[in-house]
Image (cartoon, rainbow, N blue to C red):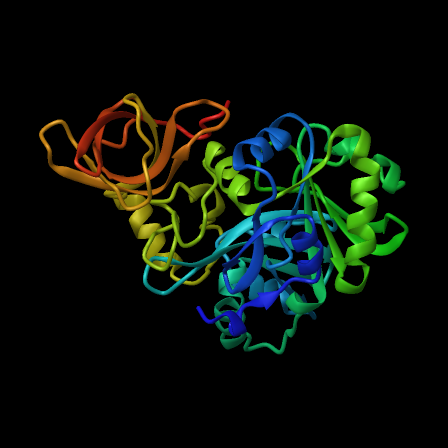
Length: 364
């Protein structure tokens, strides 16, 4: 990718001043690490850390037919949402795969926020727009918003001084729009991609620097640190959370990916008939966790074999788990080898290493 085409998030210069290693990711210049991936990973698991994930996309949908459009393009049942409730979902395509995974926020009747992956902003916008046949007002506010994920077991305590909202009482996947760090109309969302608790804070770009500084001032006594995308990947992988482009994409069925829980056949949505038939027939492969028995790091693209040397699957994401101290991976495995406790072999370059199928999350 040419450097000229890489977009900059609002606080790009702040991250560079903090000494972050910056790299192009999903079309944006992003901080990958500030110190070390392991140190940052442990900071989030044990204390509190902050990710600048302002590359994510945000779409506003408004009008009497907004819910109807969301219901038609997403797999989950958005009619179950109430004001201040968020929902994980996906956009199925016509071919059995996934356009993107996303979070749907119900702000109020006739007003919703969709948060999509940075690499898919244009793709998702076009996909939803093409299906907007009932005049829903759509606004792409991605370039106006910054997003900070304040994650870790100390997040509530560290951030409470910045708002009158009782952070400790917020349920998982709920949100509120309130004053935060002296800035009004901030979305405070009890969501995250780490499995360690915490919040995602949506602010306008013009308020980003002030809010970022306030977060670090409030968290100083709690050992708060900025965290890069390197640790974000190991944290989400320990929880078995899917990453678009690795574990789910245009060719993977949500049912194969273990996302049956967000695929609700109580309504019609894109390709729902075919997905329902797939559910009834049963999938032939499944996304599962792999725990290395032998020493070695399982990487994306490595083949998985049975004990006879037949290829039975492929790794989609893999790493050395900083919390557990051994290699973990997610892989699509053919049936019947997808059952928990099944021993398999990972072909790491020329070596054949033992692994065992396990249920996510890896970190209990």
